[in-house]
Image (cartoon, rainbow, N blue to C red):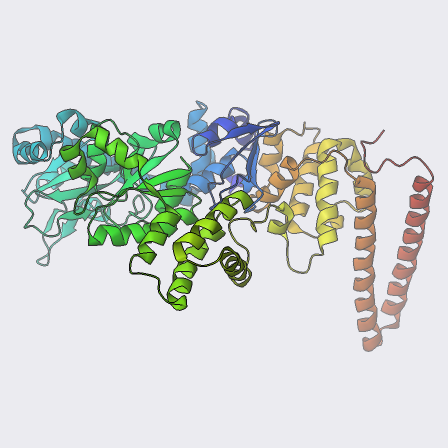
Length: 612
């Protein structure tokens, strides 16, 4: 996809983009030496393995292997294709895409999404005008009854869809939009009789914004509780999937980052009420069961979350389901225990903000809450205790330090009435059966993430070290070329990185990150990031180059042996003699290479330092 854009333009966009500032909008980063580290936004983890290099302008996760430049980060984070990510970064840098280089398929998708975004903006404009106009009186009375102030309603962009079934459609058509577009983007629906009507007519409207403030969907609340369904969300569209979105995150994200935690609630009004009382760290899961996508999105802004779902049977069931989802996303989880039968909105309005803060301070850590609930019916038999323990083992396995585990094992021992050693042994058995865990067993070996079946470990080590040496000392290129150049590399990603390096050097270009990025295919970005970010004080480049040369000769011998066998079976004597001649030439080259190696070894070794 990068081929559709002039490399000079890609380079300029990357040169104008600070990857640390970009990533910092999505991940909490901390300085560690020359680099920045944080929790990976692409996989659950408790211990930071995600690294950003301001010097090299690349990111890399030593846990999951994701890596690349600023464009690649935006592609992964926002689920964009290359041109969409490039356009977004170009806009940040005050640049516009060259019009002649756009991919037709991308342009079609871009126009489609622009249509959806425009219709949602128009619909929001309409709903807002209706709420504060003459027709919005029923909705304003409902908000007043629920205790929502005008300031809060305006801050969250609340609106009203009039009961007339075609009012929104007339408005959209007046703005140049078609009925078919309104149906496609979930703003209208077709009745059993074939009539097209506003999807949300007669409802209070809650716009759903992305964290960047773009409206992508709506939630509608019936003003009369007898109307079913009480809540109605936008259907899934290319812009919106309720599994991915959190209500009020756009308004809460800065407080969440500052305070260091978020409060997860069930409904729109719970989130609104908390914000209105000054607790602007609240988000809601759109009235649906919490999803892994929502938990992962929240984990990009904080490492700690309080779950404050309604204190009724449905709310407690949702809390129980949500605990493990949040835990698996790498979040520290605490449970706010509301009075029986209340939700956060009701509690705040009856007890006040001071009582809410006290309730938050008494929240129970995940293991305590789960353990108490599991033991509520009484753990009498050994089987009861073992079942309770097994329900807690996945949470124990997610703990990332031995200190945390030891304390948690003792806590679970007390909760279940089982011995400390029994809990520890069961945890070890659970992890051995489950395979690599997200806690202490998580791998931080970058090379594991790029291993290809059939490529020996030593080969991968040698290829990456030679490439790392080339990045540090470009003058080594002539020697690498003399030994076989691109043919030395088996791993396709390493071969692509070498091709980019050698191409840039041959063109006389400076090996800065933006130049390298412009030459690399997408599939090689992760490997390039691993090579760039991993630091080695001493690189044994001569040993590695010698190994790659010998490996290349070995592969060549196998190829010739296969050809020789085939030629002999076919009775092709001329071909046999030709292949034997090639064998002889290869043996001479190997002998010369060995003599050169011996000569080098008689001199002071330079294999782990920069060339003279």
